[in-house]
Image 1 (cartoon, rainbow, N blue to C red):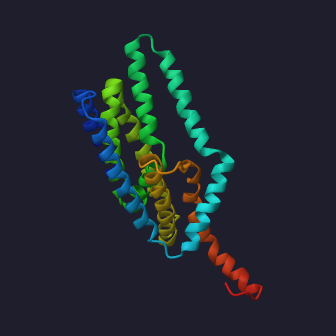
Image 2 (image 1 turned 90 degrees about the horizontal axis):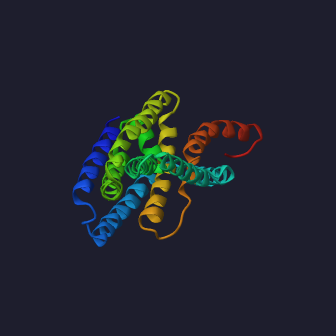
Image 3 (image 1 turned 45 degrees about the vertical axis):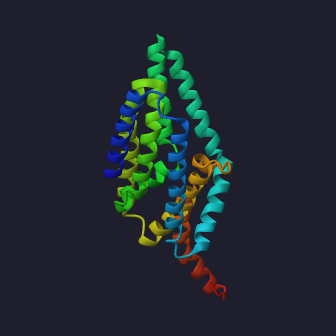
Length: 244
């Protein structure tokens, strides 16, 4: 839970700074900061991926997870959910000020709580107590909150409630799932997640290539399942007289 609390503090501080600065922070400065964060995110993702003890498991998880994500259209559904919520709540505002507040709250909540780093970071925090990913996400969200608060006002700060509830809930669920996952499963889940983290740096942050990162989220489930299936596949191979 510490990573989630750190994330909420970063959004609060960034939001307050945004309310104070307005639009006085130059675009080139924001771009430089985001580029630096993007490069660091790629390096952190690579470090996570290299923890794998079997690269074929990581490859299989990414490929199968991507196919499942494309079949389920996860990325499109996430975008559609965000657009629906924003449009619905924006229309419900009785005044321009209320609409601006709700739009800021909904947009910030979706930005901070939907994405691979949110899910993987919360899972890691809950499973192992490692909040490195959420610490990186906190820096990203802090600067994003600065920009959003400058444009949309104080509603951005209230997204902290959603961060605490959603990310905290994921971490608590992951802590319970820790009893079902072996160290090998956690290692391969982390390695597959590292690929998604690198994709976040290459795509949304550095904008080097458009990557539908959300569609790879099932890889976080597929990786532990592959690890669990390997002993059964090895036994089947021995029965068939095959080398596995």
